Amino acid sequence: MRFNNNLFLLASFFGVAIAFRRTCRPDLTGEITGTGYYTVTNFDTLQQIAADFCSAQEEMDAINLNVDLKSSTILKVPCRTRKRDCSRIKGDYNRYYTFVDSDQLSMIAADFCIDVNTLRSLNPDASETTLSPKEVLKVPCA
Image (cartoon, rainbow, N blue to C red; front, top):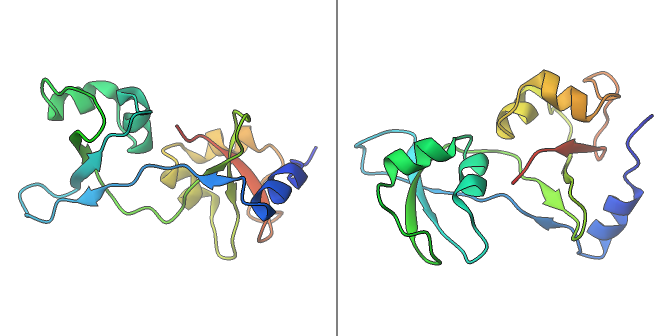
């Protein structure tokens, strides 16, 4: 059965679906490549932050020793450029990504820190040959 995206499209039209992914500011000092900074908000947990940066909570603890996780705290995080973001609808547990022309499932999966098989398990009818632009995929997103 194909994923029904009518609710998502309607929510997007009315501005209810919002981008949800955390982003980082790259560390440009040249000391360590692939790291950056994230400023904590009131609603963050270390586990959620780690998930958005394709990391584990233990790794976040190791690079942010004895940090007090409160609003405005600046954390060091694994940081790489991601092309894709997820959207959510308030009250709905799932997160969504809208497929665009030239997308590949492997690249979408990498941006959401999963492998292609996991992405396919969330979207059983999805394949490069059946997806068309503006179709909506379920994705994990903290």
